[in-house]
Length: 111
Length: 349
View 1 (cartoon, chains in turn blue, yellow):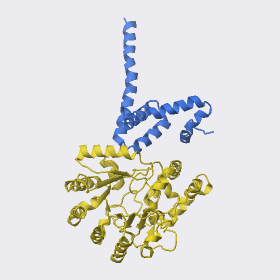
View 2 (cartoon, chains in turn purple, green; view 1 turned 90 degrees about the horizontal axis):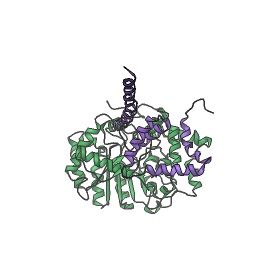
View 3 (tube, rainbow over the protein chains, first blue to last red; view 1 turned 30 degrees about the vertical axis):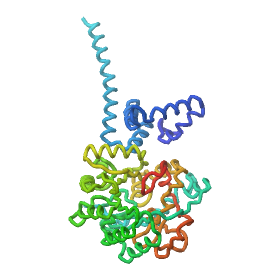
View 4 (tube, chains in turn orange, blue; view 1 turned 120 degrees about the vertical axis):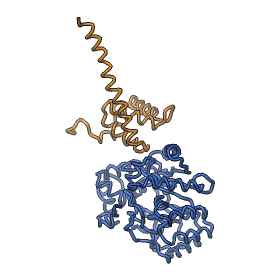
């Protein structure tokens, strides 16, 4: 067992989740690969969305995978960083918009 | 200031034997990864030459650039260059082999003083496709070389040029500061002559990844390159060839220094695609070194792994000798069989 919670080599074994539940695992991976095919959005655009979401959900495996995927697609450093900022802006906005609830509650309870 | 070559720096990896030693050891000697020969055996395949279509000639290792990933370890400090006598032997070989394609590479092939004579001889002999692998910046270096695009056009040469990315930052990082701007200027001049715009004046670009990763889809990258170069610089070209970086020479040095070597080899082995085997360039290409020695490919040339058999110089080889020869392989060959495959003409499958 590793002393760390995350081990980068575990990403290679992701497919092994099907070993304990093949129908669910197979359906997940089929769905996953379908999602990232060219569609109304290009595979390149989807890769950048995935990179942004990887940061928001703070998944180190996904960050490694979609940084590499972006490099393979010729995505520039600026594009990658702007995508992460888009994710970060939504994440911080989601925190800050709750401040309205705080303000409403404060107003209601204060005299 | 241009960086010195591995050879000039007396780097351990300037010795091909040291490179082969690395490729033979580690995960391959421990059995953690199969050697390329073992992988071929598992597929029940013996790689052999078919018919000779492409005569690829290295005119010398001298170059005006010192690119980070150059498999030739070329640069301004490399003095190895094809002599007039060996050029004569190449011309004789064109007469013997009647190749469909003459692929001129280097270093910067234009820097060989015999370049124009060899091209003229090939034109006279009606070689279908005469490729010059130009680094573009040489065409901007001085008045002498600025006249070369016109010579290319007059002789109907097919220009194949490296451009690692459509962004200045990525290109300059791999090929040197200022390379991107000079390359764009050269591409504009080639376009103005009709290259990439007029039929029969083909201008192809070569993309190789700027780091320890494989190239993505050639089709998608080509579309991105075309859109960006047209929008930003009004540049047109025909095709984009995606080439995988093979773990030799300066790229091997980079992989080791950045501690990416083991993972890169794992990726190459995992991406082995048997469908690429029938289209490998070594099956229809003869690679000729600046000294006339012959190899199965340019990479074997740099590793100094000559063709199998006793005839290892261009003057020894007759047309009938080419077919059916066992191709010499090592672990670097995984670079040509990974994913969609890789050749000097881009993806295979």
